[in-house]
Amino acid sequence: MFGYLYKQCVQKNMKNTYGFFDPHSIQEVGNKPDEVQTYILSYLGEDKECYLFPYYYPNHWQLFVLCPRQNSIVFLCSLGNKPKKNIKSLLDLSMQAHQMT
Image (cartoon, rainbow, N blue to C red; front, side):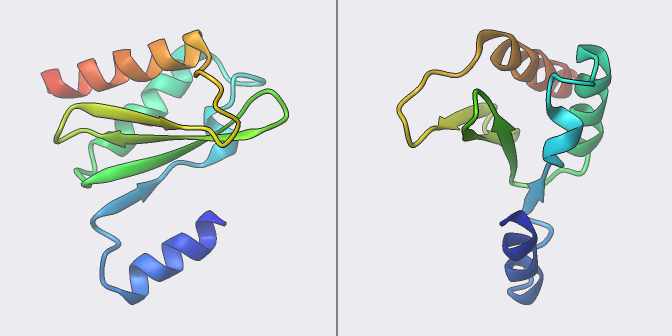
């Protein structure tokens, strides 16, 4: 799905507007929180309008949209679930660290 969205951004000359996180690099399983935060901060340094952050929990895809210029995070879940606290905290800390740079 994100490959399709990326292709659309390239075709419409908007690839500098939107960023896409690799879902495997941001999952809690197999990744340490500090490594995930470093990964997030490296992407936020690309200075895009917003970033799509797909997150798989529990057995369901959810989406965070990070907008660093507005210092906001939007959480989307088709089931109406609330975001998991530790990933939300990690994103909040990453956004705060990015704002300090």
